[in-house]
Length: 504
Image (cartoon, rainbow, N blue to C red; front, side, top):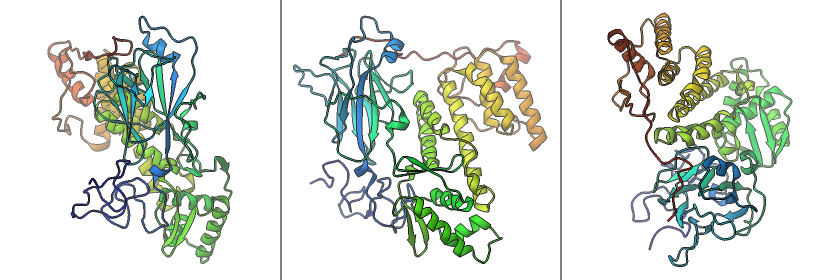
């Protein structure tokens, strides 16, 4: 008998290796669902197991899909022979079980998908066996296209997702199928699910669709505290600093000595312990019951890491980078854009004067800078070379020592046919490097062993970006000998939106 539950997840006490006698962790993380290597804290998310028991994330999640005719998508596709329906309404499907199929019912083939797009609002551009939604171990869902005739598109990506490859979904993601159908994935608040099909308006924005946490803390800007959806002000600067540090370590215990060091550094007053207790008491009056847990080792802010915007930012950055590396630039741009949009100003200003806050701010700012560069690269992979030039120029002015930005700028200039400006950018990079490090990009050329864009017009395409200064260096050599150089990319030929064919 299989050692898995009906939901497809191992039951409590059974690790990922099963129950065949091999050593396996005996406790599943209630915060992220993984099986950690130790019994002290989760190796994946850092959740501490010494605290009070928590309800696993997947048991709190209620996921739904809202299906609607999307005129904006229809006008973008402009399918020939397909008329947008005169009357339309939304249908809401609860995601139950481990697999939810998307398609059109077919009696002859014996197909009855859970999300049936036939009937009064039938979109014949949807294949009978179009796609499937698969529940993930953490309770979220992934999308798999089953080789549909017209493809499946995610968010603003102009390329269809690869067939038979699992693509994780996030709350608010939009799946586009057929000629005019959009399915919006929504994570609702904990509670009973609605009926399988309800004519009800969809929540159109991601912020609304995400569902409110009992507690949310914003650190990417001035401290923002939200309790049950209502914003709560904290007057005392030291109390804000205490909450900020607890939020940065949510799920883990922070010792009183660490809190006092973060607040006062080496200038701790004799009454530091009493003052800290007062700040904790003041915060408890503002937060939900049990939000701050007291342990023999110190204090812990309880709740999921998603309640703090820094963790949402980190997760979206990581996910966006993975999508970019795996060849999904459209989805990567959407995910990284959502991450960068979380920033409202300088992060955790209430901790910047202390020794702890400075390192946290440095880490977050570096993460944001990398995310912005990933965003530029994703847009360039989508062909927006001219659009990123002005923004890259401003980004370089803000941080002229980040060589990757120079690389991207030079490559964008190349692909926009502005070779002379690319050469000038390369010369400026040389000058900047010489002034700051005493070396030039030529002298510290990276070891590039991957696919590269050749000097011929038949460029390998935008999927892999050769460091820009390498291409400019080759351009410089080529212009010295031939006087001409062309690096225009030849884009691959793939089905695009609007290439509608007969469904199967």
